[in-house]
Image (cartoon, rainbow, N blue to C red; front, side, top):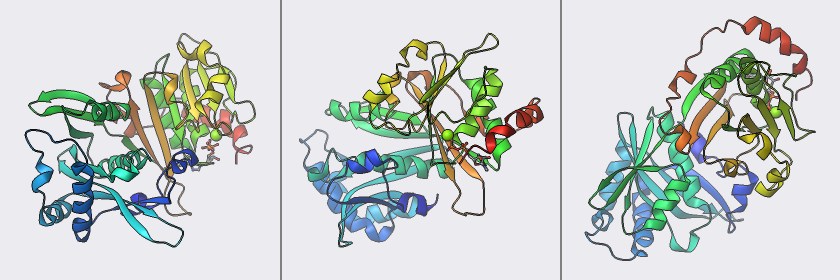
Length: 353
Ligand code: ADP
Ligand code: MG
């Protein structure tokens, strides 16, 4: 990537954008000329922390070193933009790249702007950048003195992989990136997805209207061999598709009209959660609490309106996915039942926006 993706408005859901109160948050890829502004944010952010021993490396950072880092690997800058278009740098981070391992460094948010979703947005941007640059894992060091920070990283999918003298090295897997040229390829991706899923799994599907969430679910349902056609559940909130064979059933939820996790709880998914695969369209920010682990499937359109290609990012969060290799999802191949499933579902297509 694609500086454009990070430079667009951050906060994919209205919810996340709402967390930032004092203006609109805008993320962009840093370039070496940002080094001085970044150094100022790093000093202020880390300077507000209690002193630690041994002293952290940031104390000796210089603008030259930051510029040199930005010349070899990307960095992310978060700016608040007020009504007059005035921009204030409120956060930044640096990255390193070593083969398929990307590192996060100096993740900094100005003290007055903590808890505003800024760090979260920057980490999302870094995840996208690292993924597009071919990394498969993202790593950082969490200082032993700051257990709250370690908890924050854990809530964002990182887990400690080893202890070092100053703290813990934490890692998370990066999304698998899948290029999906057309409707049939999206159904095939749904089939491949079904093969890595088992009863009890939760899938959170994101992407704007018409992105292909329901189309993907159709492939999933075809491979799972479940009853009743998969159509958009928009007007019923959720549909239970019972298994026709021995495998798990599919619960297909549409959270488009829901605005809080509590409203999702009202649908009472508990009865089916343990044994079925639960897929929640529009579930980002709402469905993460359903189970300790979940799989995010984020569907993006290409920048070109004449190109129907979708880019799909798949990543697991939580212990269920720690050791699961999702890379086979990116390998498309003809499916034996493909022609049949294509005809079966053509009738649904006209009904979809
Ligand atoms: P959503 O559930 O995300 O709102 P749908 O799956 O209902 O989206 O609709 C996606 C529409 O886009 C369908 O009409 C589908 O045929 C069409 N389409 C075109 N190209 C693709 C593609 N590459 N992947 C998925 N759907 C595509
Ligand atoms: Mg849909």
